[in-house]
Length: 213
Image (cartoon, rainbow, N blue to C red; front, side, top):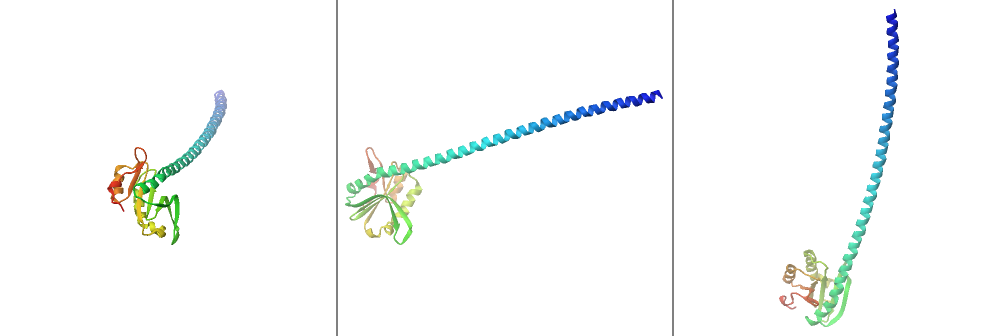
């Protein structure tokens, strides 16, 4: 009988210890979960902050890129008009000295609408009108094959925009501060004068290579 009672007492003790162990274990699990939740919340906050910083940096980079593109565009436009301003007086000089043209009218950056189709607009970089000839100038700050091709395609249509001067000689001049030799040869093959900076002023590089109109 004593043995049974002892066993019961021991069982109660073991049960109490187990319950206490489970309670302690439960507290440790809750504490662990709380620590995990806190770590998760902290990580999420740090990640959200990092994402905000990344988004801010992206917006700043985008803003800088837009500003840089704007500056490049302004610089390109300024460079383009600068070259045109350098070319303009030289067009008048070569028209007079090399081609013997008596100037009637001269304009820079002149916009002309097509008489029959007002939606078609041509922007003449420099246009010199003489008594018996016109000097048609295309100016580029950088020389590209496509620019030359566009100029070649336009030359036969010039009198569509200037019908009042139909019948006059057309002297086409492609101008830039520097024109690589391969482009000079191509312009010469298409009977277009190439004008670029020489030692002191702008010069027609292929004047002697093109039959005079």
